[in-house]
Length: 317
Ligand code: NAI
Image (cartoon, rainbow, N blue to C red; front, side, top):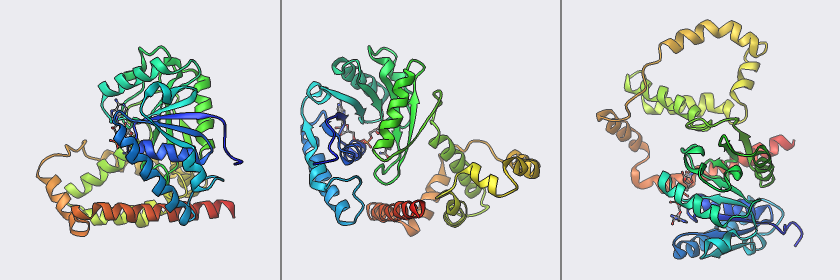
């Protein structure tokens, strides 16, 4: 069918994130080879993907121009890494988050990749220089860190190592845009990349406010859901300050003193251990008990789908 590309990508590790990448690439018409150390996981992943693609089609949220069956037809399981990698223009590594494992798997990928293949890791926390330095194709290696669940949250951060070719970074950005994601590129590595650095700044202050007894966990979540999050669902930090005064510079002039005074009042980095953690969890469990997490994740995904739809409609209007 039209929309199918004669190009191939490979996914190494068929868990939660590997399955999402497979669906995103197939949605854009790529042939996808899915490999896992455990062949029974590949079979399970393929079944799961089939189910998800049809559900997405039913709810009108399937990405791309192809039908669910056509997209599913582009994805094949593979029990051999070199077959999976053969002819792939991009290999997305999605194995568990352990440095030694990443090193091992990236070097296995390196040994079967050709000179044009991009070696991309999904790691959430490991900067690429930690596990790509000794690769033969280290100029082709980088991190593309998605956000869970990647099918609904399109942000992805591209993190090059000091030795990554500029053209590899540029081409990866183009590829990720093509499959419907919203990539940003870091100019250099930094622990936590961008998303988690911002997220941890938020978590730190929320945690301190609750630990100090200023407000409770529900109050903090109300502040995010009905305050900051209302804007941040469609506007960034810089656009927010730009609009909240006569431009961003004027915002700084007006609020610099206040921002600095408040910032000086911030406490130290929380320990995230001790009895307070149990108390915090107990409080959250009053509304969301631990045995309801799976149900609540479905609730979350439904809302993310609706929000993605709304954002798309408003941007197209
Ligand atoms: P997962 O545990 O669901 O899947 C990992 C898969 O890798 C398993 O199927 C496992 O059998 C396979 N595997 C293990 N060793 C292997 C090997 N040597 N060769 C090939 N396959 C192997 O993990 P998940 O959640 O999909 O995470 C994968 C990566 O994505 C991690 O680096 C994680 O930090 C990152 N990530 C995860 C996010 C999340 O929210 N789960 C979000 C963004 C990134």
